Length: 421
Ligand code: UD1
Image 1 (cartoon, rainbow, N blue to C red):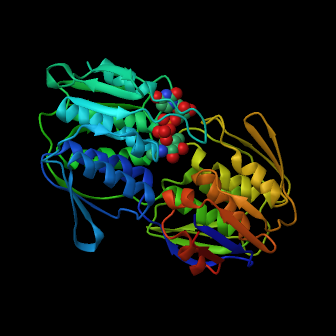
Image 2 (spheres, helix red, strand yellow):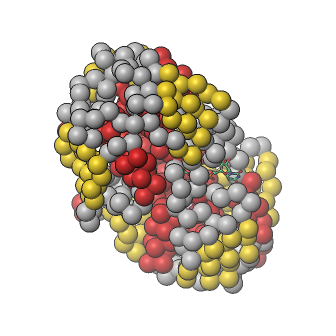
C-alpha cells in the first residue's frame, strides 16, 4: 500500500487548478445508461472512484472510448447485464447510482447492497422507497436489491424524502427522466452536483425543472439521446486547498473553480481571518502570515456547510487561536481523524456529535492512518504545518477523491512524496 511522507515546510504559496468534481462525475457516468447514443464527458477527474465506475459500466456492456483531450465516450447501446456485483459496490458506495438508470431504461436491476462504511451505517432505504413509489417491485435477497418495473416502465409519482439525500435524489432524478408521466421530488437535495446532473440530463433530452431547489419536477420522456457535457469543478477539492493555505498561514489561488458554490466555506475562512478574493473562475485565500482564528462549524445539507469539509476545518482549528466547536449533523461516525490529529499533538475532545477543538501552537509529525476520504485530507493538510515528518498510511482513501494530490501540493511548495508500498 502506498504511503505519503510529508514534512512541514511553512506557508503554502502559489496556484493550483481544481479537477472535475468526483461527486458530479459519478452520477453523470451512471446517467449514460439512460441514453440511446454516445455520451461524451469532459473534465473527468482521474480518480480511483472513476476507474471503479468505468469498470462497473464496462462489465454491464457499456462501450467506453477515450476521445480527444481525455474526454470519455460512453455508449450504452449494447448493455447486456443489469447487474452491479458486490466486489465493485463494496469498493464504492456510489455504485448504487446505477439502480435508477437501469430500472428506468431496461425495466430491471440487480444491485448489491452497499452495506456499512467507515463513516456510519448509510442506508439506501430512501432510494428503494422512492423507486417503489414509482411502481417498482423491489426485494432484497442475498445481499442484493432485485428490482423490476412492471410492464417495463416506471411511472411518475410524488416522492417526499424524509431526510435530504444527495445520491437518493440523483437516483430518483435519473429514474424519473424515462418514467411514464410526471414525477415530483420533494425535500430534494440542492447540491450543485445535482444541478450538474440535471443539466447533463437536459442535454440528453430530459424535461426537468426546479433542480437546485427542494422541489424538482420531471416530465418523463420515452427516450434520451447522447450528448457532450463537461463535469463541474470539485468544490471540496477547492475548499481543501484553501484550508491548506489558511492553516499554513500562506496564500493559495485555485483556478478552474467556482466561488458561487462555496459560499458557506468561504464565509468561515474569512471568519478565520483569511483574506478571500474571487474572480470568474478562481478563488484566492491569503492569510498574510497570520495564525487562523478558531471557528464554529455545523454541517448540514447544501447550501449550508458541507460535511465533506468538516475534517479539514477540524485540522485548521487544531492549530488556530482559540477554541472552535465543530458539529457533525449528517453522518453519525465521522470523526475518525480526531484521534489521529491528537496523535500529532492536537487538543480535540469529542462530545457526541461535536468536536471541541482547542488550538495548539504547533503540531508534530507522526505516523498516522487515513481512515476515509475526507479524514485523510485533514491529516495531509495538518502534516503541512507539523514539525518534522508525518507518514500517512492507507492513502488509497485519498486517491479515491483527490487527483494528483502530491503533485498539486508540491506546486504550492509542500514537501510531500509518495512511497510505493
Ligand atoms: C453524498 C456524497 C458524500 C457526502 C454526502 C452528504 C456522493 C457520491 N457522495 O453521499 O460525499 O458526504 O452526500 O453531503 O455524492 N440516508 C438515509 N437513507 C437513505 C439515504 C441517506 O437515511 O436512503 C441518510 C444518511 O445515512 C445520511 C443522510 O441521509 O445521514 C445524508 O446522506 P446522503 O446525502 O444520502 O449521502 P450520500 O448520497 O451517500
